[in-house]
Length: 129
Image (cartoon, rainbow, N blue to C red; front, side, top):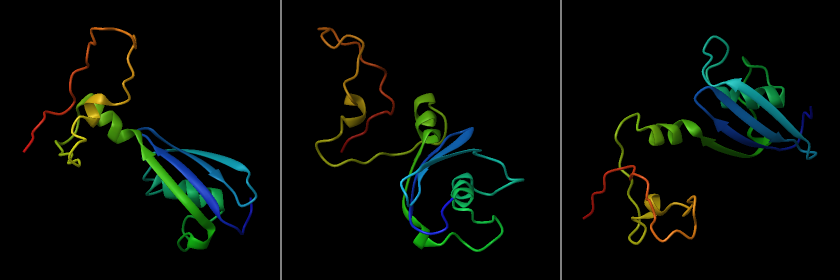
């Protein structure tokens, strides 16, 4: 592992595992997979993965900002909660003209040329001004 230079991190924090792909300063790719929740070993899986990849001891000072170029993080936890209809109610506010965004999505459907489109059940109830 390199001890200098800036790294890029791409993180997916899931309900069970946190997956991290990183690119070091020389352009090599590295992968780390941790349990998303493991309080006996670490407080935060994404941060622990970054520490391990950079070779920073867990109990040492913070990760130096100069070592990190980018961190891009997504989560399947929120997506799954939305799709499974679990969790607290939330409100999505969008700019005028985009109210159908969640319903339209990607227009992905089994038969792209079907005249009668079977739409999926709308995720949230709709309220409009």
